[in-house]
Image 1 (cartoon, rainbow, N blue to C red):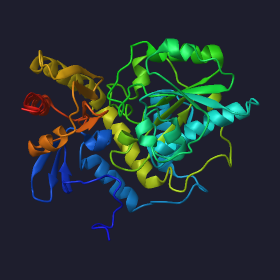
Image 2: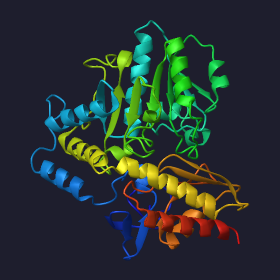
Image 3: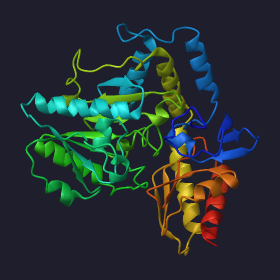
Length: 389
């Protein structure tokens, strides 16, 4: 019999975390950690944020759930705020990023079917990650996470990220959409050329495709704009987001604009818990706080501070192949696998993770200060210098 009642889907987890406050977490032994991971880009406001705590506590004592047979005020309030801040027309609320991407995939397929395309096909990118449901796994461009789950769904073509020549070479009349991350998070914090999204928009306009942006990780202030597409002048047809939207509450959103906005009609899609009053009131408070407290600007400022600091501290370090990032999405690519750094960092009082095998990924809360950034720079730089010594 298994030693724990939990399925072993995450492998061995050595830390049991019991409390959080701001940028810090504590384990069951009373040890404190500086959180440079934010629950993988979730807790942008840090832990136990008083405004979010008060909002969900009040909502829990007022109305938690009524089903989508009825309207509720918090979901409308959140939708209105997101529409005002993004320019998107309408949205569907789900429980997770994977479900938000499922909604986007359904929009693309129905968009194609409505035009008489029998096999609507979506272009996604190699090294991408869009979720672990069967549709989002099929969309994901990482063979490793697909192992053992075949047969996957048809209707996806994968091309290299940030490679417009490869994209333009696709000649398939069944293509109806592109689904792409503005920055690849799980793929190694890969930041494309500044005009990449603009060029994708141009191709979609020329060929009648939908441009769908997976902003699950890049959204909600993480890159120094509320959503990463706002670093450009384009307007996507679909945006999906989750993670930082709820600061720990399970919520995702699929936002649509223009010809994508009216594709889904009554009976086409639904969710039992999606858009319930509790999580929507929490998410509304998160977005309002990001805007009112100027934390999106702080993400840009501290992100630049971290990049400058790492470039200074690690200049000439042979183990470092590349340092890159956008806002508070930082990747330090090493010349060798570095998964062991996760445990070593925890021993040093810092929480981070490694993605793509050899890239240290840092996703600190948007409330991070320069003093806390200095701690991150110091610990990570020393860990890299000590690697394999």
